[in-house]
Amino acid sequence: MMMPAASDTVLVVDDSADALSLINDTLERAGMDVLVALEGKQALTIARRIRPDIILLDALMPVMNGFETCSALKADPSLASIPVIFMTGLADTEDVVRGLEVGGVDYLTKPIRPDELLARMKVHLSNARLTRSAQSALDSTGQHLLTVNVRGELLWATPQAYALLARARADEQWLQQALAPQLVRWFAHQPELGQKLALSQLDYPLTVKLVEHLPNGEQLLKLLDGERPGGAALLRQQLALTERESEVLFWIANGKTNREASEILAMSPRTVNKHLEQIFPKLGVENRTSAAGIALRLMADSD
Image 1 (tube, rainbow, N blue to C red):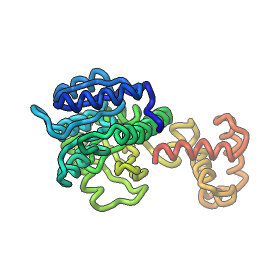
Image 2 (cartoon, rainbow, N blue to C red; image 1 turned 30 degrees about the vertical axis):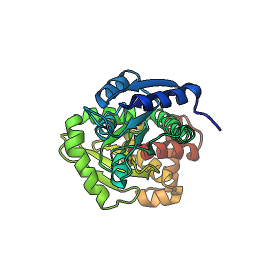
Image 3 (cartoon, rainbow, N blue to C red; image 1 turned 180 degrees about the horizontal axis):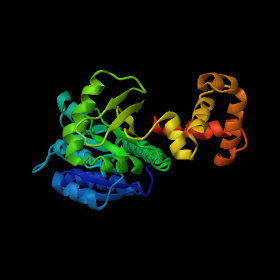
């Protein structure tokens, strides 16, 4: 049987000494680093100091139960992506559903079976690593992307998206009290991919576009700057082109021939070609295909 990676750190949260002993021995034999907490508040403190790779969480505990603890973890952007597996002796389906609703990815029924525990953990650790890898790749693309859950809560965003939210003074209170309800209402209408929603209760205009429905039920959104120009105006601003050059490049990037662009812009095909001859050296390219590629990338990032 394949074991989890030896470098994985697991936080086990349970008020039962017997359960902790069994799980700790199982995980240590698998070569994992184990952290232990006896109740929810202690677990949150440990998780914030030493971010674990996965959390095993007992549902019923004193002071703060597992459901409350999981909700608090998912409300913290720095901890929200950590997979949480509930451990419960409860046979009632409603309690299992409750654990999944507050953000748990799986559940195990006590008494815990070591082989099943390791198998379940292997799956969720692998999924978490893939998610982190994808997020790291997106972080480096320079795009304004973010993910939210079905309750409209922000789970992750690229540095560029956080910067744009900061420009709009979208603080934590706005995210919870304004953004989340707007997104929940929008999701209720089942928007199609590519549809946009203008966000309200902000001094600076922002719009979100639905990019993808993720397999875990989350939504991948793109944050759009409402004051950033689009189309030919964007090309003129970003590429230091004249107004007519930017218009020519815009239509060329949209697949128009020189003759078609000339008809749209009410100029001769020869004039279109002359503009292109000025555009190429400004962009450091040698042909219309390369110039169109630069324009398309700029416009895709703004749309």
